[in-house]
Length: 336
Image (cartoon, rainbow, N blue to C red):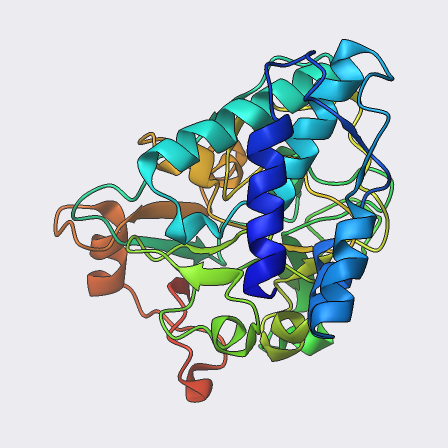
């Protein structure tokens, strides 16, 4: 955006952004996606004028007070910076707006956390192939915990049913519909492996995805433009794209959320497993590990020599998928 256009936006916002419900809380003529705005901004001064027109205020006194308040929230949300560049005050203001937006749009009371990485913590996961029986309770818990789209049946976790002796994930069946465990088969779970060298991060053109200090690879949904480069780069099929506006009934929304985790997403953005960042940064297990009825899943701190996952890595014969790609996934498999 040109300096003149940016100055105009800031000046206009200061002028008209009065108290919620006042005449300054104007309705916007139409909504515009970040992807479309980037296209417009690439065109120089003329394009800047198009952006101004797209967000021009109309009849500042029309609409209900709640409609005017929502319009101001939408305006501020669109022009906020990337999460990593926000200071503490900006993050607090953002969370206040988003929680208020939940109330205005869906009459929901939601708490959104911005909790950062815990000190001296690097998360890792181990999956016991001997214990998993294919019940998929982990998938059901993940869907509920992470507010995944019900209409598309989105799932971060896949449980592959595989014939004994086969280690190729490609040969597995993740859509089995029969009683389990099936004779002559074993079960292998996949999800985001939170790679130490994540190829998805390198290809993102907007900096919308990155690796945190505790090893969790996160997404700022409001900076994702939906190019799906990360989906193509991931060798573990971990990224999911929202082709339509996600559907989660109000009574099924998990109100305990994290800005970089399970807050409700929108059409045209990527999402993925974050090791339930809203739980794990509070010292809790991911929903999948807590729900597993057979004890096949072990989650813990790789920096803690006394943790169960460190014991597994030291005393079991472990392996990781596609280690030759140098992605360094923090997700190991083993058998008793």
